Image 1 (cartoon, rainbow, N blue to C red):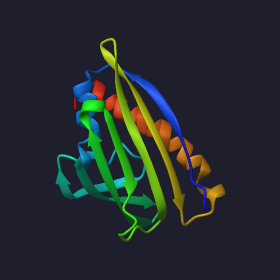
Image 2 (cartoon, rainbow, N blue to C red):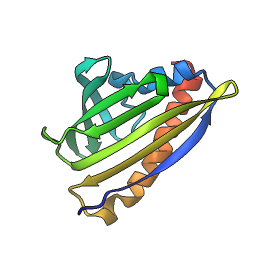
Image 3 (tube, rainbow, N blue to C red):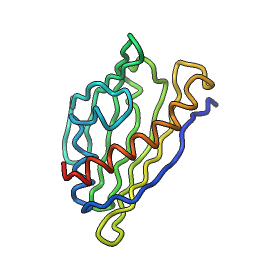
Length: 147
């Protein structure tokens, strides 16, 4: 069995739960939230699912991949997984979730992810760890600015 790399991180966000949730499910504006994501295009969407095609830039190269998102606003949970039936460039698999939990006037935001890429693990280990922190920081900043 192939193993993925990833992790879990959390932060306190000083913004209403609804604002944080809106940032998470605003798929077309995910560039700037996830490191190296240069574009995000919603290909399919309904109340329970959104298929998003992301493009990431690595130096002079770019790679597309497709992610199925499963929002459950009532539980404050957004689960996602690579659509392995589509062309995905760099990724062999990626999966994870967001959890938004009320805490006082803000929320505790948890982000968990794992990935398997076409690159050797030793090349991506630091980027995945740093990406967790950068992504949480970007979501927190966007939500606290009310966007």
